[in-house]
Amino acid sequence: MLPFNLNVDFQQLSGVIVTVVAILAAILTTLWISMIIWAYRDMRSRSRDTFAQAMVALLVAVLSVPGLLVYLILRPQETLAEQYERALEEEALLQEIENKQVCAGCGHPTKDDWRLCPYCHTKLKKNCPSCGKLLDLPWTICPYCETPQVEQSQQSRRSAAAMGYSSTYQSDSAEDDEI
Ligand SMILES: [Zn+2]
Ligand SMILES: [Zn+2]
Image (cartoon, rainbow, N blue to C red):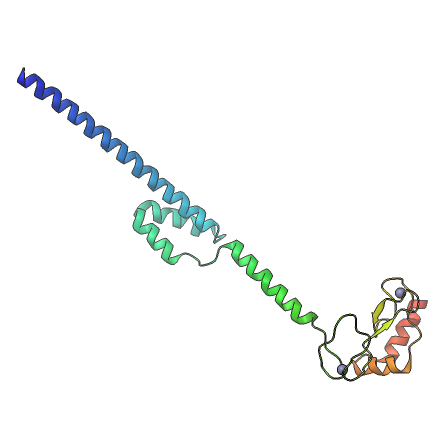
């Protein structure tokens, strides 16, 4: 009876060991594959270089956890989406700086809807005689109602000249617009 019992116990034990080892192997393999996929996807979100993406997957596949650690240390800091967002922000900031208006006479900041600089009384904008919208002084035609801006007071001519626009150019183009 005794040898038979021992034999059964040994068989049961080896069966348990095999099962445990198989489960462990399955878990480790799943983890290993997941690490490779994660590293590949992560690299793909940070670089368009397909060679670099393949190298990262290979690195993690061969070196496993240490490979993943090396990748985490060396990977590009920004994802492509973050790079794009930063570029957009920089562009918006530049645009803001470019659009900031200042008085041609005194350099004070002015607002879009000001007709006159309150600091030095330089004329900044003119009203369209037809639709009444505010126009930049050098404009020779109203962009809202297409009325050519022929008449200009002496003052606005002077301000336009001060802003660096020649008054002859204005009258020339005004004539062109009328033809
Ligand atoms: Zn001014
Ligand atoms: Zn108009």
